[in-house]
Length: 167
Image 1 (cartoon, rainbow, N blue to C red):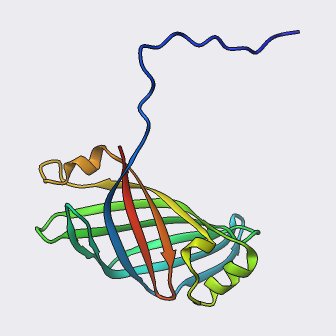
Image 2: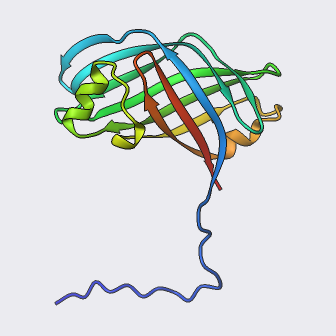
Image 3: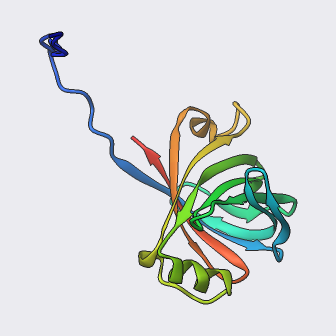
């Protein structure tokens, strides 16, 4: 019988343990969903992003109009999220965000969210991985070289997201 034991080499030190550094909180205002209906991949909807604000210890500004969240809702109600939009800092830099993740919960919680009811974020799982891009000569160029995650809350006509850099 073939043994699948792996011998690990002796290491001089342990791998760095990831920590989270809060970057900013975003309040993103949304258009009503455009329902495409059932497609070969699931129920599709597009939700336009029409503005908002963001603020954190190192930056603040506005969410620009013109982005969207392209969602695919699975048979179990889980939403696959893919949002693309831009921020503009108070000092004039535009930051592009591509944010992908999921929102899932028990069926009764998802039904409340679908009706636009307020649901505590502790009752569902909404997490994303974000890629941020900004001018390399800006004071925010460190975003281009960072792994960023977020946690969120869905409201009737907005979403609230806390963004963290993985250190």
